[in-house]
Length: 396
Image 1 (cartoon, helix red, strand yellow):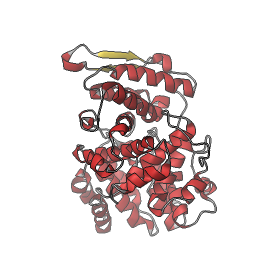
Image 2: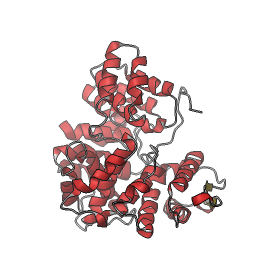
Image 3: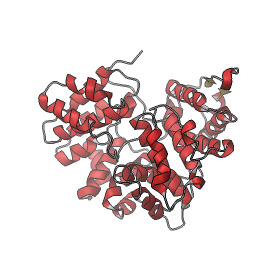
Image 4: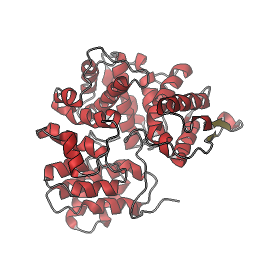
């Protein structure tokens, strides 16, 4: 049964806010149907609960790698892992995306996944946490199969993904793969992303920056050059315009200031002080992502910003993916909160119309936009929804 909206959605951020406090010490059992009708597989990951963050990540990585090991089709196991993460919440939910990167990459190598067979293994899910992480790991794992002279030809496999979200996730994964081709050097990897065309290049780039920050924090066996830039202001300030927003978006998601969470306009200004133009806009979006995990509360923060450009940029960081599994009424309630008093109102309707359409594979345009209260809101929502096949740029 679909969840219904509440006054305050108590959600944890998936792969966005970083490590949170570990929850209950209850045992974590993961069940999945066996291949070809065999007995269900189980993994007891209870030994991972309560460990220090680095040890917990390593523990879950081992447990989940063991669970998918040897399976002709790992997707039922990945689905079970994702279900367990949502149930446990806490540390596992907020870190599952990164953990499953390693699990997917390891599986791809051991199972002999190739570019031509990739679509037989990618999860059929819009879950941005465990499932998307596994998908990105799989694509990273097939990097040796990619002909760097013809990257667009390789990325055509993404066209066979079942939903818009899954196509986005596949494209993002190619950004990771391109980085591994070039030992995590950004410039040549971004050059391959450009060859995917304007509808895919920014989303591919976000995967590349994601891998870059993996290297900075020592995750997923990514490598970091000795002279690598680790200051987002310096790194993103030097990027081409088309890649500035993806650069900033991943910077705070993966490597934000220790313990920092945006709760007020002052917090946002602390992170983005002194920046101008596109750099300011991109930083504000990135700061929004590490704000409140409840997208409705995020919009309240965005609406409180006096500057319309800041408010519009803030909306671009709204974590609509945290509403996965909620009812249509919850989606309509969220976009209905775009009733800003300033010029960002229209941009809010367009952006949430677009991202809610992505979350529902286009269904929101038909069933959600018509339920909005005003003609202007409905027009903005529909315009956004109809642009869902364009680059998403700031999304996860």
